[in-house]
Length: 208
Image (cartoon, rainbow, N blue to C red; front, side):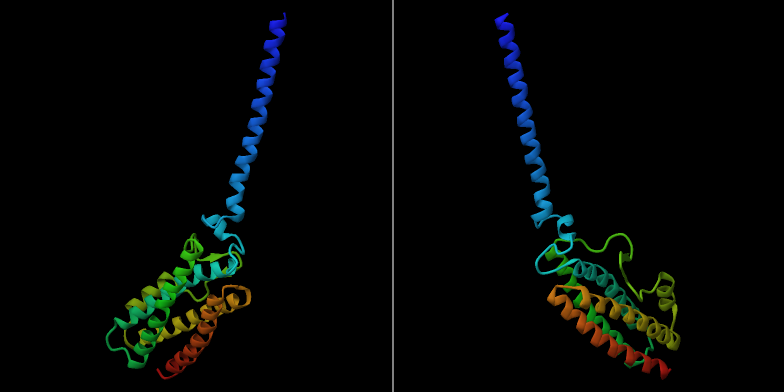
């Protein structure tokens, strides 16, 4: 009888011990899972959180993710025009300047995203509260590719004016809501340079 009681006591003690160990392990596991999310710098989820880093915020991230494809289309449109014969020199000069300005900016913004350990834009052309204004749809790009002469010039200028207006709106949003100094500086440059180019393009249109 005493032996039986002793065996029951030992079994109960072991069960209690294992239960406490399991609770402790669960506590450590939970802590291990949450700490990287709150404090770690690795992983897209941590980096995508607002104010994920002291030097940038969610607005900076979304600006770069959206302006990269926006700039890429401006470069594409410029390349289309530069490949066409018989385009006036002032138009090819404009297309060259747009390409030469925006291609390096794409690299700069791509480097920011790499530094912040976040991906490029995924899943469509907009994010909550943000949109890529002025983007030309596939049909518009096809028309630009097939157009020639004055028709191509008029189409390019009209499309690029709208494209620039969209970029300026995005840049002003980033100036208001962003935190990363280099991004805000880039946006001020975008506003100044593209507003000047819009004036230039409107004058070219008027002269056609």
